[in-house]
Amino acid sequence: MEHRLRTPISEDDVFALRAGDLVWITGTVYTARDKVHALLRSGDELPVDLAGAVIYHCGPLIQRDKVLSAGPTTSGRVARYTTDVVSRGARLIVGKGGISEEAGALRGKAAYLAYPGGCGALAARHLKVKRLHLPYLGMAEGLWELEAENWGPMIVATDSFGNDLYREAKRSPEKSSKN
Amino acid sequence: MRQEDLIEATVAVLKRSETTLPPWVKEMIKEASEKETSPIARSTLAAILENVEIASSEGVPLCQDTGLPVFYLEVGRDIRVPSFLEKAVAEGVRRATKTVPLRPNAVDPLTRKNTGDNTGQGMPDLIVDFAPGDCLRITAFPKGAGSENASFLSMQNPADDPLEFVASEVAKRAGRACAPVFVGVGLGGTFDLAPRLAKRALFHMPGTSDLELALLSRINEIGPGPMGLGGRTTALAVKIETALCHTASLPVAVNLQCWANRSATAKVGDEGWSID
Image 1 (cartoon, each protein chain N blue to C red):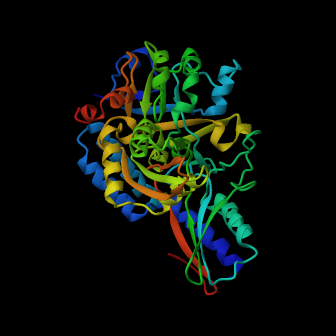
Image 2: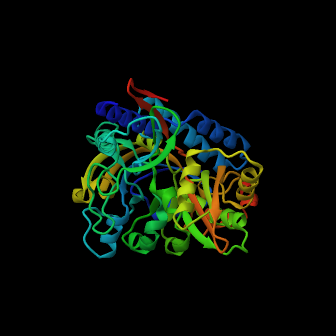
Image 3: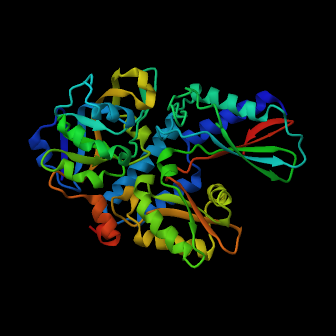
């Protein structure tokens, strides 16, 4: 099934997503990597409100406020912070490689979407810079507020009901390839 | 050899490697996408191919992780190695960081402070081999962290089956290394030689021996497919490099490279430089 979603993302938007569905996003997207997540964990106030937010595991390549390349980074490094992100209200997490070990934290609340790793130039066509928060963290680690326009397709890899494509592919790659 | 020539060649190979995939790599991804039956795997590989086209037509880095500056230098045995060699390559990296541009990725391992220009202690990394001839060949091999973090070294027991070990570990790790991956295998040598062999194996892709093709099909039999989301293609190619090892040892190293197997080479000599 295909979903065209607009931010902020509602609970009903999330509940409509099933593992394997495709999603396109329009609206505000916040990038967050290792350092922003560490801040979240420390309980600090973030300069942005994460209620209904889309969090993107990404350290973009930006030149003079233009997004040149902005594919996902490996989500496994920040998987341990999933509970912190979800408890602040984030509804969608976009990344690559999955957060299977923390998939339980999404249950009933949020979903994880996979965007193809390395596809930075493709993603850049759909993303514009709105603002850079926490600029002292640098280009890769800073919190970029981006405006997405019909950005996708992303694959619902882990839904809010506990289904996880990564786990299925590990269990039986042959079988899942024929789905 | 003129210093400015080496600097310009360094900038040129970085620019080319970041924005354009070697044609044989693109061809492999295309062939893989035709073999996939799962809609998710097909959509993933289609996005990758579209991304490659956009990057090369717009001249922008295909991946935002423009990597760490790794270079493979083949030094002709008949040249006089210039005193400015390392300095010129580093200057090329600094210029390319501004002009390509590259994302500043290089940080101190303890303070995590970013030097801002991708150079500093130990960076760029120059891997040097001697070669016949009277020129210097410089290959940019920018290495992203996703596939580098998923690489590994193991001092195995000589009684173990190293190839089955490699297959199962690659299958486990490939999803977060941006599969479909290229698998550089270093077998034998010592604790530090095995990973050096594995990295050199990536420069010598693709492998075509029976052993390499058998390992490739084993990985694709048990692997999780493109991006770990299910499908047939976990790896695109395997290359194995070996060295003798101690009778008591079996070092096994695997250097993974994501589907974006980026590289570009230039020749630099007394007459100037040109893309190879």
